[in-house]
Structures are given as C-alpha cells and as structure tokens.
Image (cartoon, rainbow, N blue to C red; front, side, top):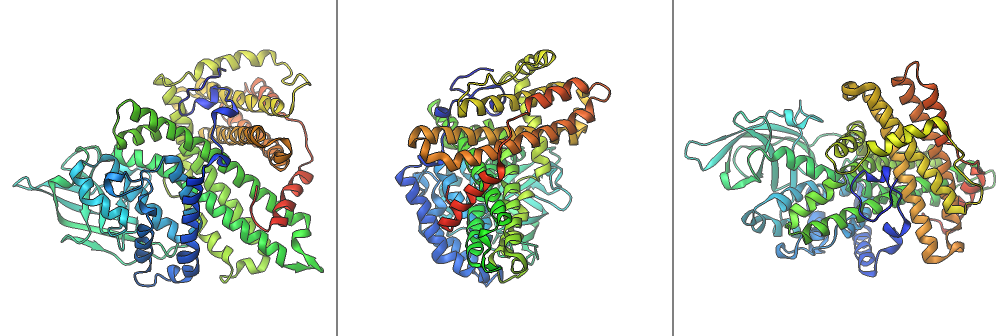
Length: 593
C-alpha cells in the first residue's frame, strides 16, 4: 500500500496515512473557536431556555429563532460575501454545525434552512436567482425548505410522480404533486421542489414561493421526536412557476438532490457530535449528583463503563468527521484554484468524498443513539421521565438514522461507491486487494516485537485494511453480478470499512496530538484509543465472518484463517482504561478529552 499526500474518497483503504496529513480538532484557530462560541452563546440565550415552547410549537417561535440566528450571521456562515454571507470554509461551517447539533429540534430547522434549503440554490442557481433570494435567506427573512420525498418515493427519490408542464405561452411551468416529511414546510417562504417535466425520466428542480396560489400546507405531523421542528405535507395544485425559477438545467434535479445529500450526510455526523457532547454532560452531571448506597453513582464501575464508552465513541466520531471535513475543504480549494466557481467546487469536493460522507453519517448517528440510550440508563427511572433532559435527547436522536438516506441505504452506498470509483479509475482498489489475496497463503507474524506504541497500532490498522480488501475482492469474485442483490453481505463489508476509517482517524489524531503537546498530554487519549482498537478488531472480525460464511460456502476456511490473523490484537485491560477516561470526565463534570 502506497503513502503520499494526494488522496481521493475511499482511497484510505489502500493508503498508509501519516498523522501530519490530517486535521485534528485541536488545530482550530481562534477565529473558528469564536464562531463556535457564538453559536453556543446563541443557543444558551435563545434556544435551550425555550425548548419546551419549541416542542409545543408555540406560534411563530421557530421562525423567530431562525430570524435571530440570521441577525447574528449564523445562517450565512457558508454564504459568499456577494450574497451577504461570511464566506467561511467548509471546515469552519462543520465546526459551527457541531454546536448547532446540540439544540434538539432547533438543529433540524437550522440545518434544513442552511443545508438542503439554501445549498441547492447557492450551488446550482444562476446569478439572478441567487441575488434575488440568497441575501434574504442568509438574513433569516426568508426561511427555506427542500421538497423531495413523496408518499411512494422515499429512498427511491427518482420514482416521484410530481409533474411540471410548460404552459402554452412558455412563461410558466404548471406544477402538480404532493410532498411529505418536509422540514420547515410549515413556515418556509422558499421551497426547492423536485418534479418531472412532462414525460422526463429524471427530476428537475424548481424554486417555488410558498405564498403562490395553489400551494397548500397541511397541518403539522405528530412525531416521535424532534417535536418542535415543522414537518408537513405540501400539495401543489396547478402552481404557476415562472420559467426563470427552474433551478439548474432541465433533468438535473436528481443530480442536485444526490449531491446535496453528500454534504448533508457529513453535516449530520457533525450535528451528532454536538448532541452527544451535550448528552454526556447531562449524564456526567447526574452521575455526580445522584446518590445511592451513600455515595454518588459516579463512583460505581458500571456507571463509569457507560460514561467512558459514550466518550470513546464521541471522540472517535469527532476525529473522523474533522479529518474528512478538511479533506473536503482541501478538495474544494483545489477545484476553485483550477477555475471552478464556488458552487461547482463545493459539489465536486464533497462528491469526491462520498464514501466518507456516507460512512460518517452511519457512525455518527449510531454513536449518538448509543450515547442517548446509555444516558437514559444512567438516569435510571428518572430517565424515563419526560421532565428530564435525556428524554428529549433520546427521542430526538432516533431520526438521524433515517435522515439523509437511511443507514441501510448509506451502508450499501459505502462499498458500492468505493468499488465503482475504483472501476472508474479514481484509485486502484483491486490491485492492492489482489496483493492481499496472494499474501493469505503464507501469512507471517504482523508484529516484530520492537514497535513503539504508534507503530504497533499502525500495524493493526494496516491489517484491518487488509481484512477489508480481502473481503471486497473475494466477495466480488464469488458473487460477481449478483453482488447488488446481496445487501446483507455488502452491509457487513461496509461495517468493516467504517470501523477501519474511524479507528485510523482516531489513531492519527492521538499521534498528532502527542507530536504537538507531548506524551504526558495524551495518556487518556491513548487509553481511549486502546479500547477503540480492541473493540474494532472484534467488530471487524464478526462482520467479516458473517460476510465470508454467506458468500464462501464450502471454501471459507482459508479466508476465515486470514481474517483471524488480520483482526488479532494484543489484549488490554479495558476496564482500567475506561475507568481512567471516566474518572477524568467525572472530575471535570463534563465531556472533556
């Protein structure tokens, strides 16, 4: 496997990456930290004290909060200065999104407006469209929504039946159709609506103002969580859309939808980090306050195990998200340097890392679900009370595994996209995979015995990658054209890939942090990393076994033997490692690593 500084999405599977090549959260500069703090200050002053009012959908409150966020410039962080924004980098935007992610239902409204509500226009709109709408969107005067999903078109978005027909005078598209699960739909002024023109096979996109005749807004949906976010069905009955409000080109809507989803997936992962940190703070605070058998429950090993595991998954997600975010940022800068305009550069930059965006959406949302579930358990019976903050955290978390494409769809995308990108020549996947296959007939000990801490861990990561490559090669070789129908196997392999990427990202972060701050400063992070790698090895082994036994019937022994070799790591005292992580957070009374 090669080592160099230029990479593309998914290429981490076949490359050795140096710690100096990645970005870690500790490297955010003062200006970026000020933006983060501004987000938190806004939430603590305006949103968190009003969570009950928000969940009860007090009339106009969400629109008012969006407007206040706009006044502070928070809606325009990623918007170019030409449209009254601050033109911050993708990395900075992701950092702000982490903070916003901790605001429950408000996060949904904010992200729907700044993400899927604004970005289609910002990236695909012509200059007249952007000048007309974007400044008002950045200021919060014109909340936005994104209308893709239909009753019979969820994951298969292109099967939607909404239609747009050019009027006889050629001045309008006559839009008819129904959309559902539309975030911000109850108060948004500008809608990006996807529909097929005449008998087109693929979607087009239209900018529709909700005040236009023929737009009908249904009552708010009653949801399990994110109760304060507006979610409605919208009906379009002979709505006259001016031809100049066609967004992008005719038939480009499906591409617009997919490309915006790449960005939405990694942003959801950053949201999950913020939500997880706030929830861990609740859990640590409660564990320090709640007394049983004469002492705070934070003293008990079972509680410490939970707190530590919450922190480990959150730290790992954070490490991976900002590694990928900086990769995307660098790709955007490269495309802009080559002459692509702002929107096209962002589209291409995020699409280049579609594999990472999908896997991080899965990992981030599932890590958050673990965190909130364990928080309820730490609260015990009180956790089941609607008066406790973990009640809201628990209910609101669940949607994240469905948003931005279900986790099942994203799992299928990870391995499928990696294989297809390799087939397109974006990077060599099958060559290194073939090398691994030639190696498994003569396996040799992976460790020489004289490795330092990080060298040893890197051997494990390299072996995890070999396990993934072996699974991909042998899966393709066995299933060939049947692969697309074997979703369980594809998801098994994706789970191996997810664990590998996240674990490598965390290793590189801890190594770089030691280079910056010294060995004594990263002792707890090493404890965390030890547990993460130990658990990842077992997870990759289990996923690999499930895949191999499913596609290699009667010929599995050699593959299983190699898998065992690639996922064997030295044993560690995970109990003591977790306790040290937990005790530090308990002493600080918050998530702090």
